[in-house]
Image (cartoon, rainbow, N blue to C red):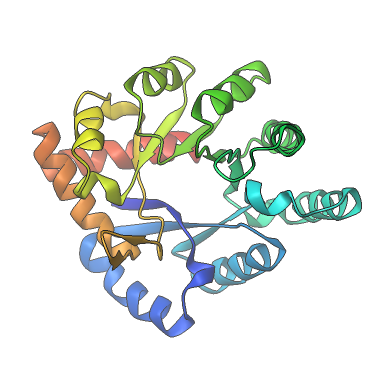
Length: 248
């Protein structure tokens, strides 16, 4: 069986979700983690997880979205997470995003909230699903300094050096749709240890002018098999082992 470890099913119409789920068994897809970005998406993902066994909710707030929250809203959010953590498989999508947050105070706010998410992760033994756009080095520093234990670095495939650092800390790296199109990502993944790799689609984001769906996980598996020169079934077994090692 194979797992899509990072999607946003709350952004999809429910009839499309149902249609996709009917086909999931055909490709041995047995789990889709739907990551949250806001108050409303947390609620929607928890609802979807309760309704469809294949879907698992990750709860959190996207780093750019939390910039807009005041202190009382942040406290409300963490109270909500404490209450709903039992209905989630992970904490995500959380992390740092310095592409649009260029002010020092905004970046510091993101770091402080990430530290709170790390503490929540350790308290409840839930994995973190980490976003790190334009902040990959900084994310690793915050995670290491605060002794994060269970970590999945979402789409963390741009730097071999940082990928190696992540594995040295025991973290997992997830690779998405760019594996199909980006030669640099393909090169980095080819030399990356398969024991620390996961797959994701980031559905329904658009890649190469096409809207991703969790069913694309089969194309990623096939491409990875080609790059790694490992039979698909053997690869599927190893990736599933990785998933269950992190999400146990």
